Image (cartoon, rainbow, N blue to C red):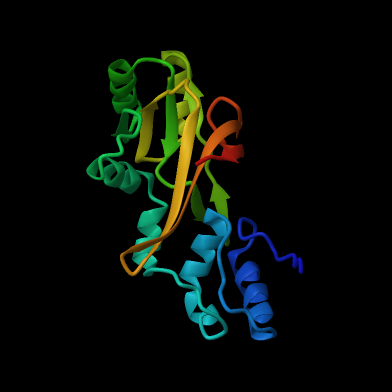
Length: 194
């Protein structure tokens, strides 16, 4: 079965209303969000959806923290999974200092990929700055705080998992073969590996 719903990036309320109507009209054992935008919308409006199905989500605060890249950097480091060298910044001066410490090119990342704007969720992209001039022209597009990260040229492996009640229930690992945009974007093609 394929069902089309309004895009939560356009209207969170329309997405949640139509999803709620769908859930109330059928029998669905669980709802699994498929993107950060749908995860945020479902988590923030869970009270109207939970009576119709199981969401299996942690608290709203835990979901908010799970999409916060600064929290991710801290958690990865604490778990011994060192991310690329990254520095939180609030302005161009700090970004200049970070780039000097990390070396060009650098990647600029928003702390969160999606933020509420006009009833929808606006997606914030990453950017690559090859030099100081490009950094100066790019920083104004990133509200504080943002992250300046060393640009990694190598291919990488992505690992995702599901943990519930303190137990690892599922784990997948994939080799990322393509990104969009190609220089520093989201995974658009990966191959599952052992």
